[in-house]
Length: 199
Image (cartoon, rainbow, N blue to C red; front, side):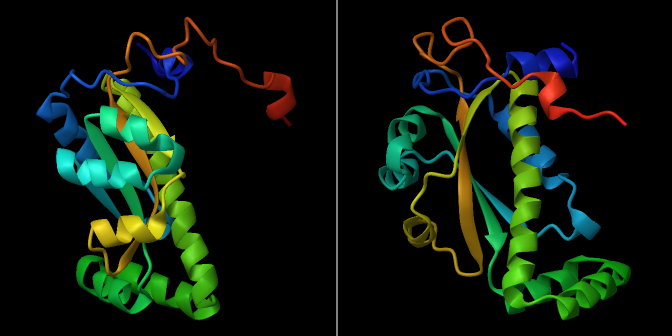
């Protein structure tokens, strides 16, 4: 299936088959795909937490607002977190990135307030979400992006100190009874001529 057909067929799952396991190989591929996500100046200000443990997933489901059932049913929950402790992230930059990137980041950091720097980081994380959504579809998996999470409670459950969760992605196999499947709810998008301008 080419990329256009893939995107045409992808939809946001609203109900999952809680009995169908995801092959671990696909999960490992998804990890590597997210690791390879592009970011501005290759800064990579993120952490991806893959939650398969049913007990931990249930705790997160309970603080996922209207997404509780999706999290409980899906076999995998990926939590997308952004660097929040700038001092701790500075150490990451200095120890894990080449010197040219370190210098570039330091120049950017000097030109921004801490608040603006965190906004810039957050924008990078949304690139990763797009990659995760497309990669899941390419692997034959269904997914649900979720901003509806209680961030402070996610931090507590996952014992996070230097990263802050912004959203999560439920991944699994949609139920045949999913009311949002394309046969039941055809994809609806604005007309191409209203969203694409060619000059």
